[in-house]
Image 1: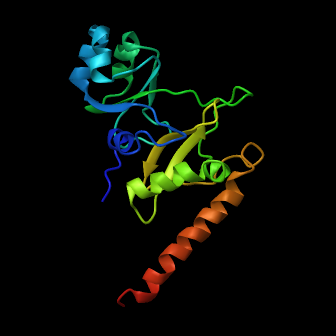
Image 2: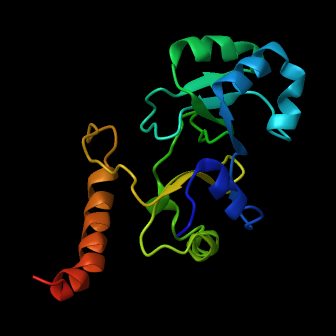
Image 3: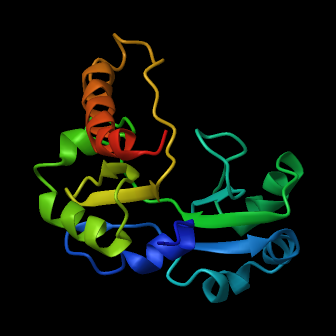
Length: 189
């Protein structure tokens, strides 16, 4: 089975044409505290990194316990707010649209434009079912934020604000039912 941690997915999807993926590494609390005191160590921990950074514990979702650090000097404040032992340290890449809004969770809208990159992601990850959190960069590349076999998919957002979500979610639910139906029919009773 594929390893779906941020750093493993980053390595697995490296160098796919048309795909951008923020560099990511796991770091423990002591290493993060040291990095806050010795910011010149940043390039050894997360090569080719520019500020800002995302600091989040493994297993956190939907922005909970996630912190944005504008550089190593902001890390002590992150450590005070998030009492975790392990963290993912992730370079924040720009996914603002021309209206200066952040757009994520839009894989269905990007599927045709990025079909080749999505097919290669599917091939490299090798799972029967996976969910992705992605966006588009201002340059038009697919920006992969997360790949998982247990994504949280919901339609509780305000419909006037996110009118695309419910129709897209109906498609996701229908596809999942179609994927699982043969297994249900052949399962022992």
